[in-house]
Image (cartoon, rainbow, N blue to C red):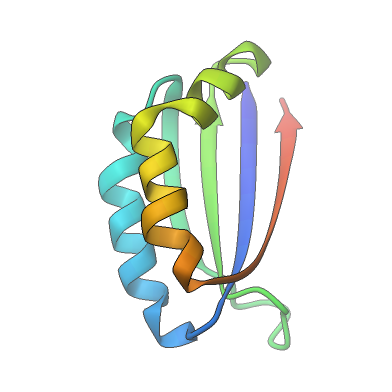
Length: 94
């Protein structure tokens, strides 16, 4: 199992709930995704990121098809990118 962790700093932190709501709508249906959750980063209190998306994939072979799926591209390129200040992504294999 691969846990893909995406931490995001938004240009306008007040949009965090809208971003998480849209991610909750889109991500569970994406190719290769077997689990998904999203939440506000609350610790440390002075974190440089606002929200975190946790995407569970069956294995590392599923990452590229997930990343290139039309739903993911539309979310990132059309919806998220205009709202995003910066993002940090890493994978954890369990």
